[in-house]
Image 1: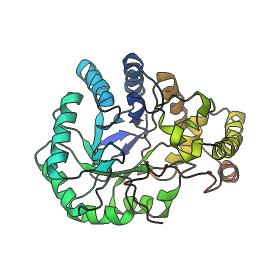
Image 2 (image 1 turned 30 degrees about the vertical axis):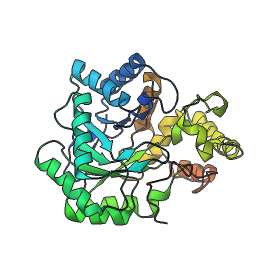
Image 3 (image 1 turned 180 degrees about the vertical axis):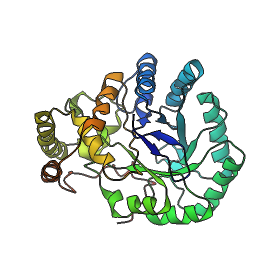
Image 4 (image 1 turned 120 degrees about the vertical axis):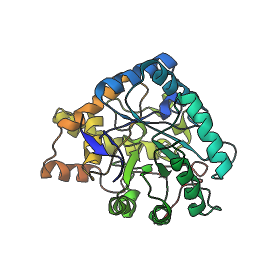
Amino acid sequence: MQKRKLGRNGPEVSAIGLGCMSFGGFFGSTDEDTSLACLEAAEQAGITLWDTANIYGMGISERVVGKYIAARKPDIVLATKAGIIPGTPRRFDNSADYIRAELESSLQKLNRDKVELYYIHRREAERPVEEVVETMARLVEEGLIGGYGLSEIAPSTLRRAHAVHPCTAVQNEYSLWTRQPELGLIQACDELGVAFIPFSPLARGMFGETPVNPATMGEKDFRRTNPRFIEPNFGHNDAAIDGFRQFCRARGWAVSAAALAWVLERGDHLIPIPGTRTADHLREWLGAFDIAFTDDDRAEIARLLPVGFAHGDRYSDAQTLGVERYC
């Protein structure tokens, strides 16, 4: 497994991490045994950056990861998050008391006395980010976290935060169909020595071997209200990506591996964290390290999936609350 640094001063981790959101049922039903088997496959593959959050299944994901940690003691770098309070509408809390209480709860579920990376899942707009970073810096000093991260932020927020205490990582959606971070955030992370962690690098399942079918999604599937998965947007998106699927298969590449290889090429400070519920899907990713694109390959990918090709916003109006927009 190839390695990359988790920020300028952070530990070395696998160049591809594991996102554990799906363990909480966001993309369809799952069960504990399947999730544990997926974690075992990740450990065997040398995937050492595991990413979860307190709200993934309202604790389910953290408990599954914690159960595996208690039984197997894997040598991993662990990330979790706090800051979102679900509801209608959802709200955000970055206060010192809330962040500390959620961290203590997460550590208990994860069977850990610290996590290497602790994210503010969404920024509370009314609270100065400098105040939030001071809270995170105290947790670092106390040895409860190795470093802090920020999620779905603008470059300006990163610069303000980093000036108070060095940020370890920034996590935003980034893939062939979500390219906004190219407009300043990836560059700011590189300049400051901050790891950029693309989540949903496989476009929430669109860059899988089997085409996504919205008609078969469960009632609680996160994508049912996502504009890109609702007609007529979905039909246009599926047609565009089908051309990419055919391109990959003609070259003997797994579609997911090719999509990840494209992300990995964007910079050595990028560490994508695709998510899955199954070991089989995880093993498909590993082919990314065997793919070496030619200039012709890159040109064809750009023709098939030009910047901005996706139809529809990446979030619904409700889902976009808390996401910083800067372009």
